[in-house]
Image (cartoon, rainbow, N blue to C red; front, side):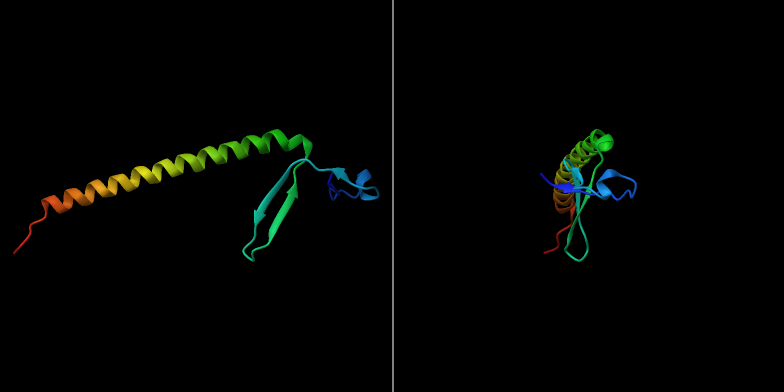
Length: 87
């Protein structure tokens, strides 16, 4: 089990082994390093819900890009068909 200090100087973890960690947020920095941040127990459900919303957003964006690609192909085919070809 990972234990971390929360950063509150008045918390019991400041002088003890730390809080048991269950949920972390990870992000990559511009330098290629990975940073993690502890999510408090009170915020876990909100953060899990936000993560699910983000996954749904990414999936919807993927579908939108596929539709956009199809639309571009249709428009290019239509433009080619309507084009005046000179020989």
